[in-house]
Amino acid sequence: MAVSVSAVVLLAAIVFLLVRKGGLKVGHAAVSVLLGFYLASSSVAPSINQLTAKAASLIADIKF
Image (cartoon, rainbow, N blue to C red):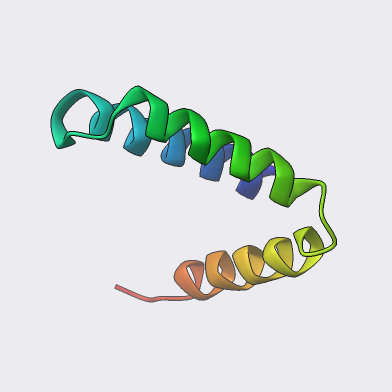
């Protein structure tokens, strides 16, 4: 749960910055949000969740 909440906050911040500074239009951001909702309720959602969890664990295992 902590990974998904932090990922949501990170992605929301990126979208906000892209809307404000990067030229992303609000309509494009809305379509992206809708795509996320539809993906979350599709049969692909568990695979995306596993991929995100594995990527987060890979990043967490990096020693600096």
